[in-house]
Length: 319
Image 1 (cartoon, helix red, strand yellow):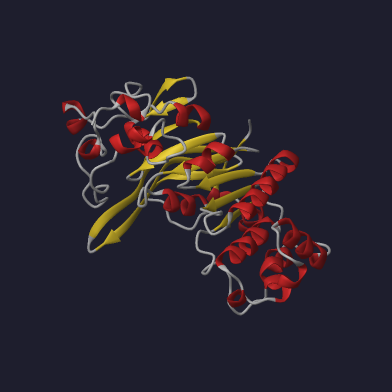
Image 2 (cartoon, rainbow, N blue to C red):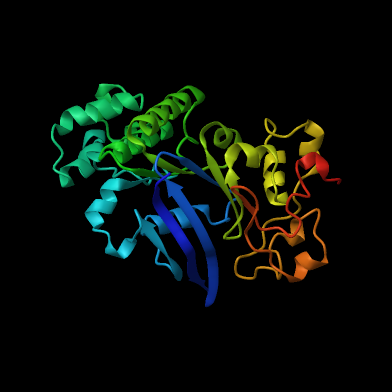
């Protein structure tokens, strides 16, 4: 596989009331041509912040982002914008309310001096399941799902190499989700487009992702092939996320057994040792004092847990 986008020890910090909030803390990640890599984790885990860092929106406190091996600062902005496109989570904020749908979709094409723009817009509307008359609509005439489809059409317009999609299907009904997933699968097969997918729906991740990275409090705590990771997680946090997904939990009793207590700690004051230990059902003394590193425990599988592999399914954890 050919690496197309990568994070190298990436850290993102914000200042909050005079304190430093570490939103992303030393993440290493690669995205290869033609693959779907899913980022999962609770709200506040750093998924969206990492995605914006990969897009060059957030200034890095440490580390670097590379595109096809070149550091972002050395890549011409217009080249990066053509090849790396976002699909943002909020369809209401992603479209200019003054622009009709056709103009929103065509906007990136004008900068690229694309050929027949009108035909391209019509083709994209059809691809995302919108009738031709939607080209003349303003965003306020669209539902949330329709806006999200317009945003996806706009992202696909310049024929990018990478899509960074933040919950792109959450506003869509099941039939439209299936259509969009088929479209993305076709694009990956024909043009080797890579997809970085931020998702909370692990059932979707199981269906579409080749690899998954699990984030907790700004760090990757588990990473590996999606099918194997979701079938037999190495990290108890991953197991808890799986147990909270009825279609993935082994039994209903498993789902009830592994309910994480409380909320994630504040990134302004992360706990010592393993940041997950206050909520972990198998935490021991070493977890409270020594932070585990993200290391390989099986071919292609990494976890940041002193007892990685001890947990294989949520049913292995007693209440």
